Length: 446
Image 1: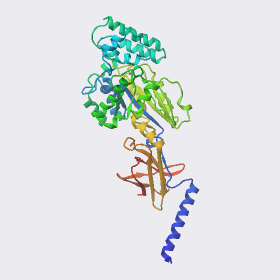
Image 2: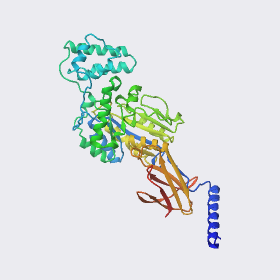
Image 3: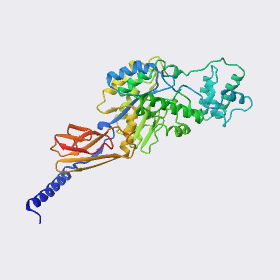
Image 4: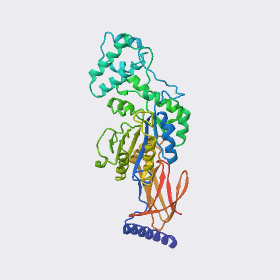
């Protein structure tokens, strides 16, 4: 037999549950409804500021400007020339003298081109770099026979002693002079992402598998040893190439390549593309733009404005030289004006390093959120199908709460947080951060 007071409690519970449900329907608000916002903090767009090559003025001039404005960025660095590196520029393969000797009787062809191109900067002679660069240019433009002839010309010059003994260093490697791992550790501690740009700024499209592997894997190993696993997530293959052979080899090594992120829910518009991001109906658009020395400020600002005119654009800015050092250098005054333009719109723009945004969008697209509400509490469970150790970027959740809640307390496994509620056309809600697989989240009226 059910006691009267217990029966009365059941009746009142049913009544309040029905009343809350009816109220939610009447107001168009579903108490406990939770969604993951497209961008962190519910902002309209994301911007990632990235730098290629690690030239000295990026750290001496550009970084202090960003520090003053509290803007974070990604630096894709060439690991070989950094002081303290244990993996130097190196050719992996047969003895160089054997390769040189073979070129006297066997012309360059599809079977030996990659090996010869890989060895070309390690022949012991100065003046090989122009051949190496020209061979890559012909090869990537589809004119392979011309690339083969360039290699034949190089090795003939070596055999005929037309070149002086020595070695060539690329402009990009030379411009990193003075950079140390301790410098990069200090920058990483401030929130900047340090990521791979290979060991030597190599033309990976014309390297054989062994040397392509050395460039990618040893750069990653260097960063792992010097900075830790967090910084082995992102990479940019030099020259922004999208060569299918290189991408296929690189994807298993680095979770995120700025060259290509072929997600089914993302449209990529890389630097050389003329597509307009607003024409895509994909959940996300990664829109890369590379300001050059003479790119008008009005055009650079229009990229930001276009991103804010939609809700799915991730604007990835690619800088190289600063002032008088580096390829297509941007004057620091121009950089300062542009960053201030972005900073002034930070209420609507999430400015974050490349790896952070890549983690966020992948987590959001793989995550599952469940919520349920009781009389005085909302319980939220957030999970994902990705590796929780690698994908730990906090997601922003938006949960609708009763309209009379002005303040809430968020209880998570890692502590408590008090927040003010907000309102939109659908009702009263609260924004808060949560890491997937971070345990149950409780929201109660404060």
